[in-house]
Image (cartoon, rainbow, N blue to C red; front, side, top):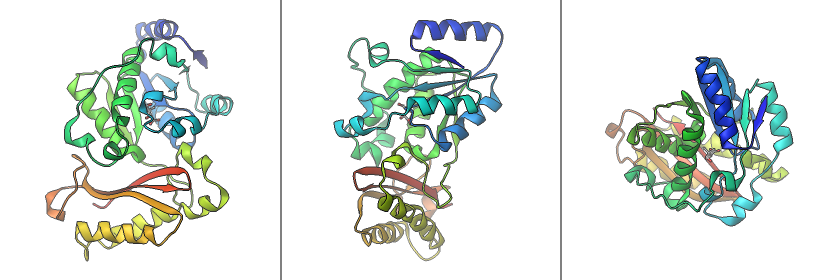
Length: 280
Ligand code: PAF
């Protein structure tokens, strides 16, 4: 596996590969890799000639400075895991390499970024869009892979690719879960033992709620989920939304959409967890 810290050297390597007619599958990450990332990478490797991964903890997408400080950094273990999925090239730039001058770009993705994560983490998606667009310009991948745990992020990146005619196909991959249902996340490693035993209640509650679709309206389902979470003292609910999968706007009736999901964000101790499930 080749390790690159500088943009120019990575670009030389990728240019040579492109001349050899290799297709590039790309998985951008912030490191602290887990099975969820590895699933994206295995798929990228199987659908392209080479797999490129980036590891960059992007400071401008953190609206909370403590969250940035506490974000897990496990580069040695990450390198070992990358070898297991036969990663061809990993890009681990410094902050100065990515942002030689302060970033001033402001994106406007409309209603899709006003809700849920966008409402609770001001500036988060602007920071994500800036870094992902920059990484796409550097790597020029044929396909880029994103997990559905960050469903809204994937939708915004899809919109960015369409708005700016970026020739990269966005591949959406299902959430990978622990055997007890907890959605895999780099943040899970910051849960203490007690919190880790409580966390699977998130997915259990979502699954129970989906089974109530015939008896509950979207608003009553939202209330049901919120009520279940509030029974657990350790949870501090940020939002529960029942939304249309395409536009991510809350729905009032089931007829409004072809596909709806429950989206949740909550704090458990000082760890922020998100999850979602398809209702239909
Ligand atoms: O999902 C993530 O890990 C990050 O938001 C991403 C897409 C790598 C951008 O920093």
